[in-house]
Image 1 (cartoon, rainbow, N blue to C red):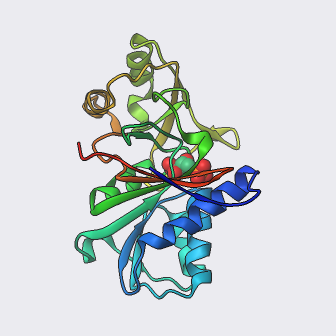
Image 2: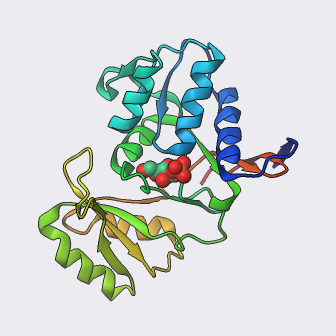
Length: 235
Ligand code: 5RP
């Protein structure tokens, strides 16, 4: 683990911008890269555009990210038209010392997992508030097919979790894939790999927001002291 000092960084927005800029070191001109979703990723996209580095294009994890990329003149490519990606850059809602994450606060978890699976390396960009000893404080996002909602709420309750349908403007939020999101609080996720596999097997679950099979290889964690680079052991 190494830390690059940076003077007087304090607010969370500044920390997100710092992590976003740090990810430029993991991109090379001419590459096709995978890009996630969220406010930290937006900082990365803006930094990439400001850097003047020309990449061949990006595979995007959401409509929101695609819009931002296009606004900067960065080509958005179809995942099916490109092979393995050298790198996938994305944020997280929580990341633990093994590189496992909770993701989906931006409701883009399914496409995020697809693009992450297509990349050789997952670089997670996060501010220090996202670092946890154990996953589970952040309500776990789960993308679900609406007809399974009530049964899945009962299945989570049997694990001690309280699941709520995520709302937007008073109605269930509809994801880019036309599905709904459950946010589940009160879970204890001691074994992220086993938990992810178990919930993914429940009928009606599209994607669970535990990223253990697609965990991060590197985390660029911005702190008030600078960016700490955490490299995870291969699992
Ligand atoms: C979106 C995500 C984001 O990576 C996660 O919510 C972190 O977002 P932010 O950078 O805005 O804090 O998983 O689905």
